[in-house]
Length: 423
Image (cartoon, rainbow, N blue to C red; front, side, top):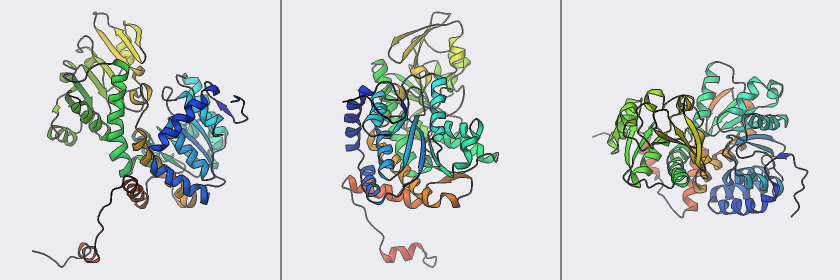
């Protein structure tokens, strides 16, 4: 196989492409909904002429999304949404095997990361796809020269939606963005089951520790935190949940977990996982009471949740395993940080299982199709995934699994729409 290509790219090694293609094809076997969409897109070409810049985790699942969009007629360029999430063989295959411009290298520094985002913007996109809002933010700050051409976008994750809502509240968001994360078939499954399994998978891969009998502290009980707590508990861990929201804390308690303040929980934690989307969740006062040998991991989008600057003060740092850094503190305690405090599930493992991403990326594909037809008529701001798209993804997923469900009779529909019947 030749390693030459005319497709614009910046990837680690094009010779990895064959292996990447094998893994992309394997992921496709677990993504039947996206596969059905690809077949229709191939026939109908609903995205013809559309230029898309996508800033997403460059994984085998994302590759199948990109291939689907290209099958629909889109002209696509892809860059990474996290410096550690890129699968280099996948990036190579996208360029060499599928002819999709890709700018992503695992472990790239900040300068390379933003150079790649700018390369995607240089493409002159009409629609953006983001995972964390870095692409959109760059367009609205440093690259306003390309902003007028963009008529719509999508956002994949919780943190990105939070940033977009902030932009919209300040009146600076210039175009409509569909919040993929808010679809039921995304946050109820991707965030809970995907993040739950992949986070625990990453912790075990990187450390090779036994979770049974360990005390695992989960900071945050949103959909992602629920998933992490559920999976850790299922493997025999003693789970403690920390929260700032009283309703979520009460829910965690009634789900069978212990609930405590983080200062209290940190004293007995074997493993701490932050899943909040906030800054310095695990801070100086928590570091001060950590026991020797504790492990810190983050499954929130940015590497802001653990105060690594405070942890590093006076510490000796060395890498003891892939994705495991040992911080030897001045008092002799050792604390281990996974994946540099970045998204551990996508940095130290493979991210969400393909079967879960099947629904998320089906939502992405259908939302792009919807925006192609309707985006020009939407006001700037954050928009939900249309209910009919969400429901169609759920129905198609059930069909692919061989599961049938009931439908309402005409009598039942009429009853639900009436008010006369009573006790």
